[in-house]
Image (cartoon, rainbow, N blue to C red; front, side, top):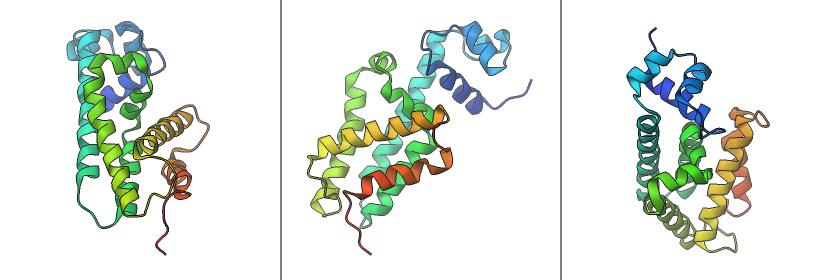
Length: 179
């Protein structure tokens, strides 16, 4: 059976989201791959978790690149940040899971959080973020909103097509409109 490894990894990660204790046999069954193929690619559950964590760390690194760029257009940068989170929803959703969160330690998440906080602080300094909240709270609200909306989409409550718009609209009340 030919398959795309990235696609398989995403299917496996998505199967682990609602059930972090899922067995390799259950993972194979839920993703339509044979147990032998699954074990050949990811020898153990721990190996699979390690690969998923590497993907999550890649997401953190990409967020760092987006938020760390010097840009005169904060709104465009914010839209790019939201789009990236939505495009990588499977891995972003792990941020809301304490059991997976503990696997890679607070310091790795802290750097992601610190980047978001700095990004929103810069937005406040430039007058784009007008919410009467400190930048750390705005980062918390952003993370909670993104993971909540992504989860709603996962359960079929909202269309994946509308996720970016919903997140942006929810933030627009606190973002200056330059039009």
